[in-house]
Image (cartoon, rainbow, N blue to C red):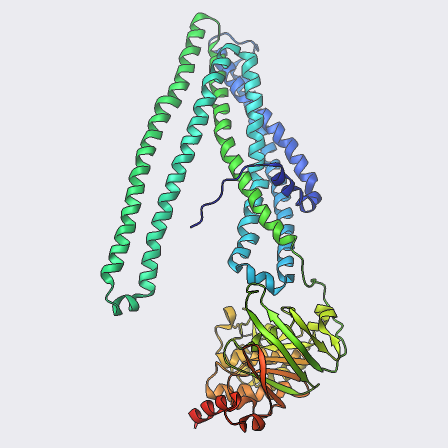
Amino acid sequence: MEKSEKRKLNREQIKELGYFTRFIKPYMTEFIIGLVLLFLSSVIVMAFPYLAGEMADIANGKSKLHLNLNQVGGLLLIILVLQGIVSYVRVILFTIFSEKSMADVRVALYQKLITLPIVFYDKNRVGELVSRITADVDQLQQVLSVTMAEFIRQILILIVGITLLMISSPRLSLLMLATFPLIVIAAYFFGRFIRRLSKDRQEKLASTNTVVDETLQTIHTVKSFTNEWFEFGRYRDKIQEVVKTALHLAKYRASFGSFVIVVLFGGIFFLLWFGARMVQNGTMTVGQLVAFIAYTMFIGGAIGSLGNFYTTIVSAIGGTERIREILSHPVEVTTNRHLARPLVTGNITFDDVQFRYPTREDVPVLKGIDMEIGAGRKIALVGSSGAGKSTIAQLLLRFYEPTGGQILLDGQPIAGMELQSYRSILGLVPQEVILFGGTIRENILYGNPDANESQLIDAAKQANAWEFIQSFPEGLETKVGERGIKLSGGQRQRIAIARAILRDPKILILDEATSSLDAESERVVQDALDNLMQGRTSVIIAHRLATIKEVDCIYVIEHGKVIESGTHDELAAIPDGAYSSFAKLQFDTSE
């Protein structure tokens, strides 16, 4: 597990927060009013120690306010109610400010994520990106709604408390300031060290769980290799590491407990003893001593909590860096809806197309692909795994741009076309169909949200999906489950075909659309695909050659180059040809 780097608040990180001004600005009124109420709340709370001291002095007959206990009690009750009202309104205002501004950040992040190019997702893990939109924003929201307010409050309490102490008891205050802050700061750093050791123990304990998880997940492998002894030893060693760390932690935890009892409480009792002597000498009243002790507790709490709040704020600023990196990344499309589709014939030309993946620039994938695909014609790409077939489809979809050569549509380079308009004429039926977790209706309408009921049903019929849809009690309203798990592979494939039919693409890409299906499902799906390909320029990535016998041209791809092209009969007749070798293997096996 990676150790998080130590962060310090610097000018650059403060500038990072400035980037989020556009999200915060609309709600600054609530924030400013909240800050004013926070100041009032912090000042009001400092009246409690003073009035508590006055009650002690009244009880001893030495009050300077000339009030009785009931009057001071009533004043305390009024201040308490006022403090409650101010705190309530402040919390509501800060919540409005943080919730609405962070909602805008989340919306902006999601909008950015869905408009980023595929290359971005090749370089970033989806789990980490989800963490940005959840954990990082949550952390920032926590800072804006709670931590920042408490941080400011503790600073105000510290300043006001020390000022009041210096005015009321300067001698005792100087003694306190010379000793107490040092004790509190030492306790804070001691506590941080213990928390770090505790975290180390948790990580070691988590590693033991990893061993258990790995062993039980691969229990068949463990038993087939008779390696129970090895796994037992591995787990026992991990547990011993946990015990060793826990004992080490216990020593420091015990030392910390002793430190708190002896030093921290010792310091408090020393101040109490010194103050009691001042009361005995007549240089301080009992009420002043009570107020002093109360103020000291407030100040100690403020000093102790400032470090934690500071760490939380700096951590959140680190999260803002990651959020800003995403928000500042250049997009490939917008979220504006493009209803206008370009009028194209559908002639596609690959002119010496070369390509290397951005994440593997040292490996050439396509090494000069030349192909001519006439409008309305069906072509197939055949070749061994890794030959570059799917890469050609991805370039046609403009998930990536060629590193050499160009792709033309009706004689125009597709690189110069507006991306959303260009993609609106394309349709894709992938090998592995992953549906959205809604209803069958919603998944089919994804191809054209404006389609009416008759168009929807007609698309389902052409895809050979209407019969099984009607067999479900809820019909089109049937929930498909997460990723379409409630449907079989053939049913998911036909839903995808219906979706593509409803989209009515001019150019169709079929990426091994039947390779994972059984024979019966393949026959039904292939019939639906034949309906879909009628009158459309179709590019088929084929695994099973039986499905492409009737296409207009087959291109055999090997090592990023076209090594053969022609019809099924022409290629099968080439002695020792690559296609004829594939055909012999498949058809001989099937016979």
